[in-house]
Length: 548
Image (cartoon, rainbow, N blue to C red; front, side, top):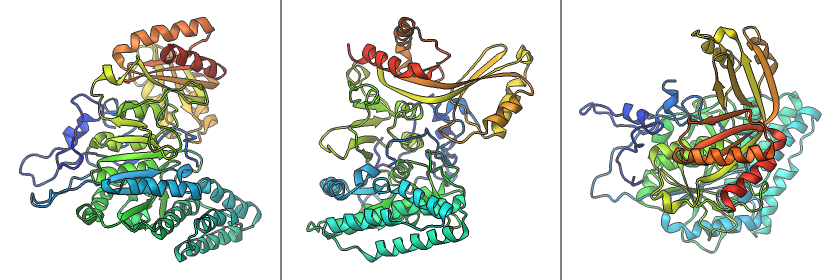
């Protein structure tokens, strides 16, 4: 699809989410415009992302346990008159390590200037480890009544001074506001989730102001920068709080955000007179309360903006050269992956790859906006493209497996009950218990009298004791701790060969597979195995599928 066109984004017939698009088309003459996405967007994903710096559930992309986006979320705007040329914008998101200090800011500024002909909209994360430093300062104020924001202050003020730039009032004013807020925490010796979200928001707010000051101080005056807090452009969410420790967030991006963002960028699309520098990760609810999208939520900010403005591409700039065939820390022979489909990227990130925020993939996927993952340390490298579908699978892929990802620290729950035998309603009751405790399930397998499923306690805190107690009222429950999930991204037509070779490895290494998920997704096979076997098995599978 041409991102600059007004045609309605669509998924292939039968693809996950395609029914949502079909449902959104209004009858001719209704006077309503079709919309490419539907229910509110939820920031959900795995823990420990890289830059730390239901309707028809079976038809949705399989990574989500409820709709994170559907066909009514992003309104399409009325087309401009044929006499007015419609020009596209490019969205460029830079993670925390990409803007960590003076040298990094210089590099990012150069990348942006090289892309000026593509009319970039820039989304920034907090600088370096600022989010962690903010949380540490908040804990110190809460636990000891001491206010100390010296590390945060030094990160921004010293960076500007090293760059030869005077610290602007907007930075000093924001630091003063942060100090007042910390004084309040120290005085009251309490902190709410809402206050914590407000505290961590200073990371992105200081980041865009610092970069704006440096960019505009440059001798290159071709295009000035202009910073924005995302809510100034219309990014609104439901009320709630985000997680400081994972990518989980309670908030949902409101549908009206897309229209507002589109309206606020309309003039810039016609006449690109400045470079917008926008805060990632943070938003406001309808009452003006600051909310957060979970760790690495800046990716989601970027794709929401990209879809709203029908961007030519959404680029995620990190400190790695795109997506790798496996985590390089697991296997030194990891190879670059040049192209993935949206579904493959979503599965990879959900099942452990530290690449792109999982919730960020779906808006771009549904609207057909291409994405790429690039290396800010080596901008000349092509990185990884993420597209709707492979143009030529034979030429785009050299093997049956595109990539390998994994998650450790998994809990497996095995539920057994003779009540399941030939009876209806038992599974409904079991899952009502999971719903009561707000627990999300990753992988599930069932038999006549047994249900086995996995939980990722790193994704979101779980009341495991309460959950198990409720389940044991109606069944026998066994718990396996310290398990791991290993996911191979492979097309379904290649899965027989992949399964055969994988089980040959398991057999040779004496590895017991506790569970397997195959068929629920068109693009992956997932194994659940003991955590201590994850590293050697991952290395051996990479050797089998990538090193021969």
